[in-house]
Image 1 (cartoon, rainbow, N blue to C red):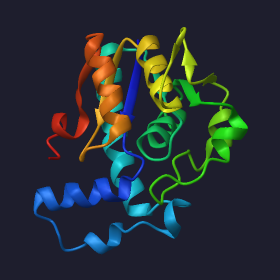
Image 2 (image 1 turned 135 degrees about the vertical axis):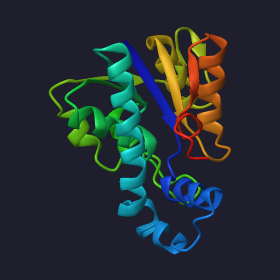
Image 3 (image 1 turned 30 degrees about the horizontal axis):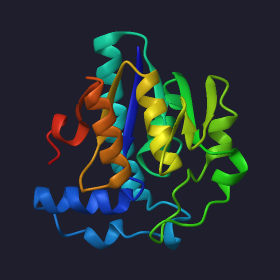
Image 4 (image 1 turned 90 degrees about the vertical axis):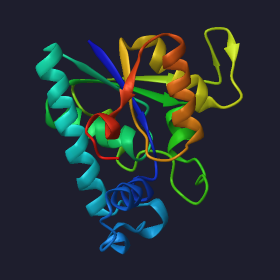
Length: 194
């Protein structure tokens, strides 16, 4: 069973929203972005990692052997890939564009869009990497990440999101998965986090 995940690159904002929704606003500053997106806020990383690890273990219990599909971006994509590494699962990375283009991209809205630790993911022995370009399956997409989202949906059995606030890329992936009846739900809702 190949399971794709989509979600936010700015996990710090995501975690703040979870805390606000739960009424736990005492430590909001602890979840501020560190160093303009070049590193993670460790509290935010750990919070999201714990949620994703718990959820993926539930999926393993439900389906048995699973493989993870990740889009290789900072945030949810990277964290879910790290859960796959730590649980020794097969990992499929769908990288938008060439490796060099992707690794050297400019920041998007002040935050690094690509995975911070992409080379470690590339070197994982159970990782298969695909480079997806703006023209995918004879269709040219406005943004390369939308082509990547389509490739992820085309290659998964089901998809889950980790979405707390509106996000163009995440919303696009959810829409594509829903059109193919592969979207299974939003992890924060499933785990009663929001």
